Each structure stands twice: as C-alpha cells, then as structure tokens.
Length: 402
Image (cartoon, rainbow, N blue to C red; front, top):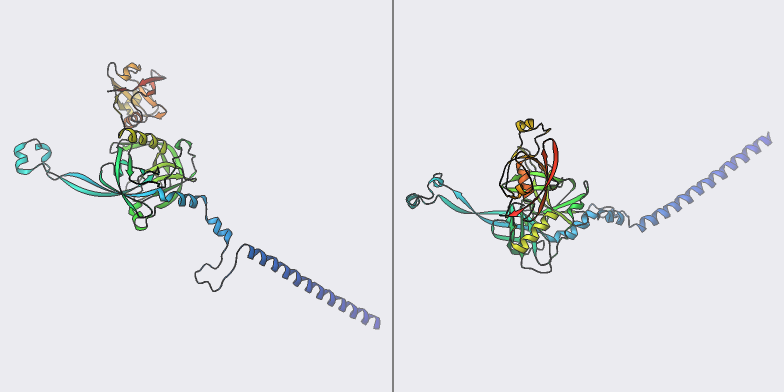
C-alpha cells in the first residue's frame, strides 16, 4: 500500500514538473515572437497612436508607397501642361424671318434693316501644351471661331492666345501663347495603341478647372480604335479612339494620355443616346498621329489645303440598289457620274462601280467616303477598292488640284 502511495506521489510530482516546464517554454516563445513582431512593426513604421484624432490610426510606409501608382505619377507629371480655355465668339442671329427673302432689297433694308444682329457668346474647353514655347492644341469647335481666347494654366496665370490655324473639317485648332520654358506633354504614337490599355483623360469639364487651377482627371481603357462616326456640323470623325474614361462638357480639346504620359489623342466628343444626359461611358478622341499632321500644316501654312478634285459623283447604297447588284449589304457608295479627264476618269473608274474601301478606310456610305477623301492632300495617290461585275478590283487615283 505504501508502495502504491509512493508511485502516485511520484507521478503527480512528475506531472507538476512537466506542466511547469511547458508553461515556462510557452511564455518564453511567446515573448520572443512578440519581440520579433515588434521589430518587424518598427522596421515598417507601422504603429497605433491612440492620441491621433485625424482618423489615420495606422501609418504604413509600404501602404503609402503603394498609393503612388503609375497613374498618379503620370497625372502629377503631365497636369501642369493641361490648360483651361475660355473663348469669346461673335455669332450672328436673324431676328427678322423676312430678311432672308429681301436681303438684297435696298428699300426693305432702309426701313427694316438687315434683320441680323451680332451677339457675343462665351464658351469653354480644354487644351494641351505640346511645346515649351507655347503651342497648344484644342478642338476647332472649342476655339476655331474665337475673337478672344484666354488660356489658364495650373499655376493660375492667364495668357491671351492667338489662332495659328484652324481646320473645321478635322476639328483641330492650333493656338499659341507668348511664353517660354513651359511644361508640355510629349506626343505619342496612336498607331501603337493597345485595346484595353489604361488611358487618362484630363481637362476642364463644366469649367471646374477655374475653381482650383487644376485639371479634372478620369481613368479608363481604350475600348476600340478605328471608329468611323457620322459627321457633326460638317466636321468629319474617322479612325477615332473610343474610351470609357469619362468625358463631359468642357473636356473637348483636352489630352488623352497613356499610362506613361504620352499624348495619344485629343478628347473630342461623347455618345449620348436620345434622352441621356452626361457621360455614358462612350467617349471619342482624335488620334494624335492625325493631330500631328494637321498641326504641322497649320503651323507652316495656317490652313489645310484640300484644293483638289476627284471628278466623282456618288450616292449611298439603299436596299433597292443592293438588290439590283446582288449585294450582301448596303455598305459602300455607287458612282453615278464621272467628269471627263478627271482624276477618277484617269484612274479607270466607271459609272456603276461600287466603292467599298479607300486606302484601308472602309466606306459605309456617302459621308464616310467624303470623310475619307478629306484625309488626303493634293498629289496623294489613293488605292480605291471597287466592286464591278461580281469582282473586286483596286484602282489607283491621284488627287489633282482644282
């Protein structure tokens, strides 16, 4: 019996010793881990400050650094080269509905005047500085008819701008301010755009630029390229860049840049379904390669020379024409008349030929044909794809000056 008691006491003592050992071991390891974690926390500048009333309880340099993305760095770099543009135009309004019928009648003018009055109209838009000596690009519908143009910089300075040249057909205007050593946005290559790549739109929507002297920034992706749109007030928009970066009123003329800060397009217009108000995620920009060409012509000549003739008369294809020619769709235009000895005549085009493509521009209708032709200049040779007698042919037409 005594032996049994001895064994029980011995076992209990052993268990007690083991329990004490594991307890001490646990607290030693726990304390060491706390030291390691504390060291890690201290090395990463990560701490809790209960006396901080700002709401920023945690300060983590790694998290702060991660906020500085390629987008924020690009915006910081190019924002100083984005400008707000305020324009004053003189527009004519007809107040006498009979004036158009009697405008050449001296008796009518003597008693009633010409029925037309001029009114100052103010508008706003955006622009991008493209050189250190003050050249700025924007849309023709923003500043092309301006009699007074004020450019506002991000530092709050304002400059009077003069129009070097404006091209209503392409909706591009080149301005100049008298300043030196200005920040500017480097021009990219719009032929190298990737569908889905990140893009940044900057500008002056609704005049918000003036409230803070800073451009508004929106971010999106390139949704599509090569978009051919219907003309607006005789302005033609072919090969446009589509983006879902929000573009609103006042953004026109502002830059669309890629993630490394290269100017790849000029924000120009948005698609708004009937009844829709504001941006619906479908915006369009003029490709910068087109802007470069127009800009250089405006800088050298003050205008874009389209003084050529084709000798063509065309019309869009409707269902009856498509059926008569056994066409699968109504895309394209049909030649209805050709002037003798004209460029079209010399190219071997014939009445009844159906034009489907001009230098890789797909021709959908008469307006896209006119827009495509306006992309070229006197002396250019056009490769015109036609459908004739159940065959596709390509003819070369050289644009001749009028």
